[in-house]
Length: 115
Image (cartoon, rainbow, N blue to C red; front, side):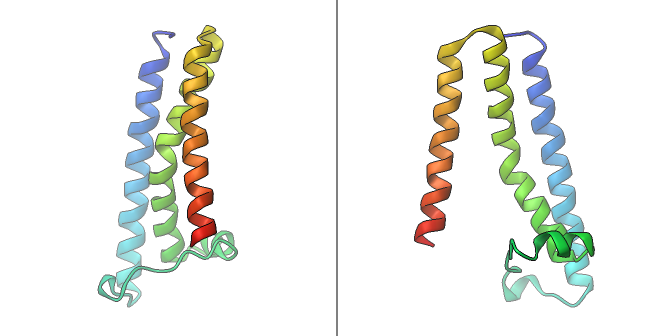
């Protein structure tokens, strides 16, 4: 693999984690400042309302953006590795990355279907 790819992928994880955790912290603080209580359970994620809530700067949307970023950052690293492996012609590793993405995808679909 390209010697520059691994540090770049590590940077994706680092920056993605810091940004996501910052958003979670900010959303949590704004949620509490607005009268919400973390002891009452977390806010519900409504994907239909999420873009509008985020555009309006609602604390729950900021919190959920951080949570989603935390969940998506490792996947972004796998996709980046897959592209790097493809550019290097390492097709076996591309296949492994595709398999990882497929397993995660099946898990997401199974979770959505079963509730």
